[in-house]
Amino acid sequence: MSARFEDIWVYLSATPLLGLTVTLLAYQAAYWVYSRAGFHPLLNPVAISVAMLATLLTLTGTPYQTYFSGAQFIHFLLGPATVALALPLYAQFARLKAEWRQLLLALVAGSLTASVSAVVIAWALGAKKATLLSLAPKSVTTPIAMGIAEKIGGLPSLTAVLVVSTGIVGAVIAKYVLDALAIADHAVRGFAVGVAAHGIGTARAFQVSEEAGAFAGLAMGLNGAATALMVPLALWLLERGS
Image (tube, rainbow, N blue to C red; front, side):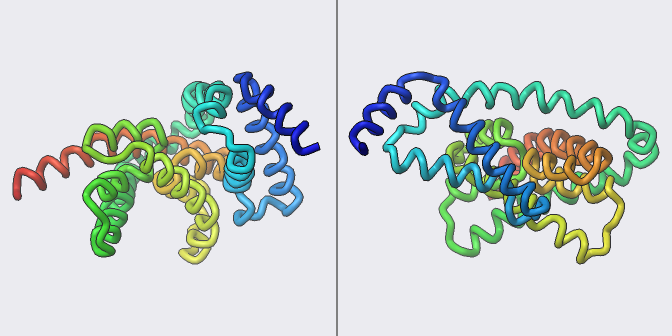
């Protein structure tokens, strides 16, 4: 029976649709668990589906490249999905126009804190330079973070793992942190989550309210641009000063 299953798996793994199918099934199963648990933050569907897929690929010995040949179709849809975030944000344009100064200040503070705190903590723990450079863009969406890491001498693959981990952790703990700080405004909560936890946090914010999701999407986009500018500039200034 086991040999039969192995033969079937080898046949299926040769088709690009396998990666697409197992990704959709894993996320659907994870989301079912998430919804049955009352959308508890600790049961984030991204974390569960990643664990399921990693286990499946490990047990079957399937190379990541083989899996991604099908999963890349979902990866492609990240672009249109990100652009679509402009639609709910447009509904919040009046507030955005009125509070752009506060949002800009929050963006700079959040972006700097996300990068500097991670690098300083890792440096204090003895991390190597490549790891430090890979950590700097960890709070922005994966394509931007990997591009930044590659340009400044980091490891894009390590950055990708750190970005996903950051997003999952941020989506899980954001509610508790913001509740502890007595922050009730959905726009403020969403913006904070978007800066700290990029796309995964934004998806979680949309489950709370459209207002929270709109401001999370705004923060995700702005933080990506800000980090792409500030991290290389900070590195250049440090190298020039030393």
